Image (cartoon, rainbow, N blue to C red; front, side):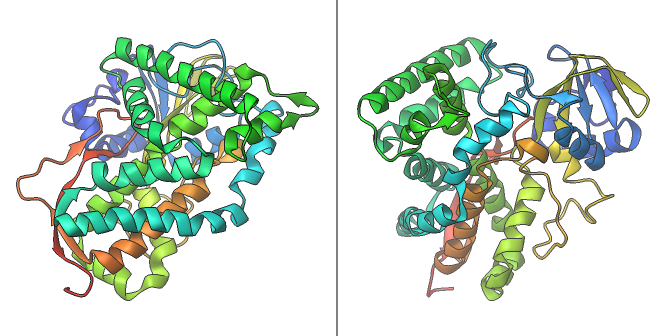
Length: 399
């Protein structure tokens, strides 16, 4: 794909692109910053930072209010929007206002000890074994258990909804994805009914008790909210964790620096988010006829915002292909921009910060296991690892 770039057939799910999209992004930014691919029903891909940021912010030109457009291709055709990501202001603003208090800094501070307990328990198990898979044994369970704590989801059900999410977003088996979507939907409906009958202090009960300008959410609206929060709430963070831990496995100097200079944790987290960009591409629709870099984009065309490309744009980020732990400024778009900037950003940052701190304290030296295959996820609009086998070469007190 990178030897001869057919700009009409840019395949964001091609295995070579998935493994390393950045050479393609580099060529597109330079030669075709707005490119139309005929694949997956046809879409425009924006690759330069300023264009992506402007499109993410300008909802009047690039709308989110078309059900299913956020994924390319549309995984499961729908007629009802997922809330709040598939609405535009002012309705979007009203929906966001419902849940903003749940993501307050005070709530994050209260969550910190519980997330640290989850992380240290998982790390202790890895240390005891001397080896493990940092995706299956750390990134996924940390993200899943944190989401369960945050939302009040039954932890006993976590295995089921992790399986459903993985199947729902499998672009290789659309039939099974549709089946998983139905199963997941039934599970959410059962949770809604249970909380209506017996409310608690969890996320879903809060939504049930809330109103939007005097309007109490219907079961359909509650279902749409829960699909987004429960469905996307763990996968992207697990992906960010997996790429961060993979980078550190191969860069011992960075590991040692973070241990020696713990004040770098916050800037390092932002840099790993820029570098990995778990949501590489996110869809919109053109709300009106428009033009960008001489390319005519017609109303209702699918427009893919290339967040991964934007975060590696050398016009904004010097040495974009390298993690610079103290990079500043770092105006990355890993959480999007504008009204749809990710609500869950504080939770993701919390998990990444605690991971850096506790790995530095408890596993100062680890490496990818000999002969292990680095297994990237199969979707190019997301970036993360499916497995990361490692060996623990030193532990706290033995480095």
